[in-house]
Length: 413
Image (cartoon, rainbow, N blue to C red):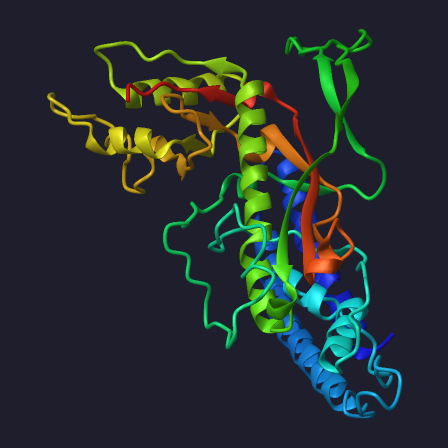
């Protein structure tokens, strides 16, 4: 095991340590203890240090590979136009989709053959997986099918950033609310749910008498994994500018796939919500949200967040009171969150129906790996037109374990 692999292994161990602490707290329905918090903070500091060391090792590996690339030079027309690359250090894991594609052997061979003046061969790269990460990048136009056409754009250089006037997308947040569970085999996720539970009466027991039973009945629920994917075609001229290609893939394809994921997760949560609190004229929208909070608490859950459409959020912000106000400090209180709920403002929420929920306990996202990317110039007429098709995809399923942990409120938009 080389130095990079050892550092990555140590990083995974620290991450696992923190996950186990959080999972234990979730399973027992309690906050993280002071001792656990200290252990987690120490692991986080260690992870930051390991991440910096890993990035330093990756940078060194890139320099070595660049130097090794000068090992053999090919003069067009004198030898096989496909250059032979000297062995380099062990290939490191790509940190982004762009890196995964431009660092693949298939892409490098294609690019080298093109620059050497030979005929560009057909190729198909294997899918390369990037671990799931938080969202938030801007995106380009979603309808783009042939980047800069098949002729390319002369003088195109690596951009400092991708400018996207007219195509700014909203930030994604729903997936961040839900625990994520990795799935390593199969095309579905199976999890147990409690079907019945015998409640104890609390009667005091006498010596020698039979004790109360607390029977449980479980059932297994299976949900199929779904695939969310997107593709784009890019001209060979643009592909030769590898940094520009990496920036494009990193910002556009993954974000579009995760936008579809956001809509899928939100729709599933709404569909499974255990209750709906009706807004009635003459009362406040905040009262309806409080009713949803109370409904969830009466089911023994503690709501933590609320999915709300931007239009409904504007209604709440503009609401005025004609009386003396709320004795308890009002819906926003000192935190700026209505009734202590974290507002998640998303256009995937249903207008007029904010969704209140205990997201940490009520549902989970089951993921089969992370985002994967693959490419080919053998799709249809791609080879004839010097175009490459690039595809990104996710496989996941959502399981709502406790429908009673979610309730719809009402807002009169």
